[in-house]
Image 1 (spheres, rainbow, N blue to C red):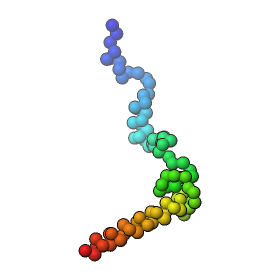
Image 2 (image 1 turned 120 degrees about the horizontal axis):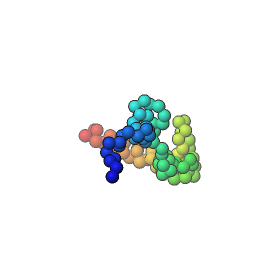
Image 3 (image 1 turned 30 degrees about the horizontal axis):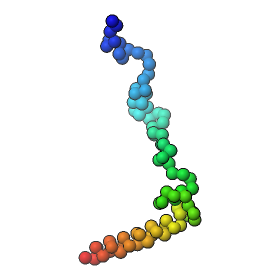
Image 4 (image 1 turned 135 degrees about the vertical axis):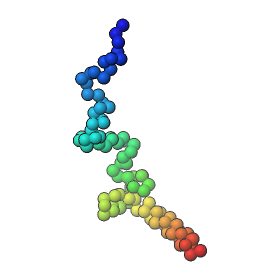
Length: 90
């Protein structure tokens, strides 16, 4: 039988784990993980509702919102602000 334990680390192959460790330490190469298709929203979808926009609005920063979703959000936050003001007055 051949002994495997003596030569376990003697290979000249640069392993995946070594490559990842060295690239993280040196800062060279890609440092970010690849994103899957489920983590990126489609181009024509609203940032609030994640549904396709019927009446698109674009922010100065380039984000796409649906007009209906923005109005619902503003009304929801308006009610929340009223409750917060009441709590602060008490």
